[in-house]
Image 1 (spheres, one colour):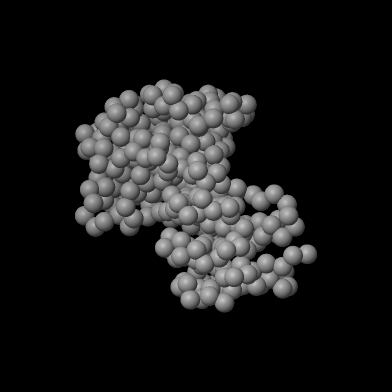
Image 2: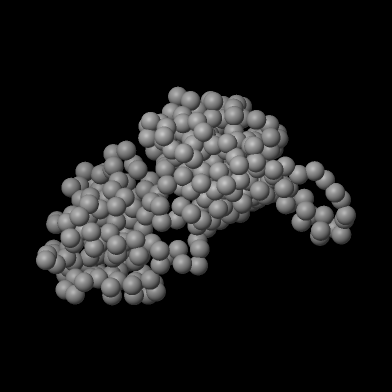
Length: 322
């Protein structure tokens, strides 16, 4: 069976790299966060694992490896690595899509419960020593609109279904989800106004592409229900942050729960920090105690497929961006 050399773009001290010892005997490995770590191995390398290296390191390394056949990116999001040289290369690109979907689905439901039950008010009253009864909402019977019905969207839908929620799913090719038993209504891009108008909870889980950048802006907020909640667990720039702040300040929507942002880390003094109708997560909603081990385990499974000439999981359409 053919032997391979893998270039791993990472800090060599990262503990999950020890899992690479499970690679078959004879597999070459070079690890580093600078290109000089790959000078000797580059000529024979067939695989690049973009574990935690920078975009610049990936670009420079790709240029050094004439025989690269497969590039795997640890993350699900690809907007930070899809530079022209990678798009034009003959290398197959895969990502971590699906590895982190379950905890993101849980976060979306947790965020919906946060607003439905008004947990912020409960904590505020508890801290003030105030016994103040109030009415709460319930998720059952409410509508969740999922913008971007891929692996993350399905993880949200399966959990929302357990709560008795009505599920609208919007994706680029709606026919794919039209027979999905989790989905009540399958929508396409032209149906975005309908999704916005009907959703009590709008979950943004779409990849970042030229078409989705800034998709949720002033016009979108104008179509949403006054009691609607935006939950962004996809890519930050899908939401126009300035427009979101305006909508939240004017109480145009009830609130927002955000795990991703236009600029990360969210700068000190950003208005989102001070708004009382926002729940912020510093892009760690999928950081379970074993999330990195899961990510490496997925690479190892895909490497086995690569070595055995079987179809790889999570092949990315580099021109579409997902």
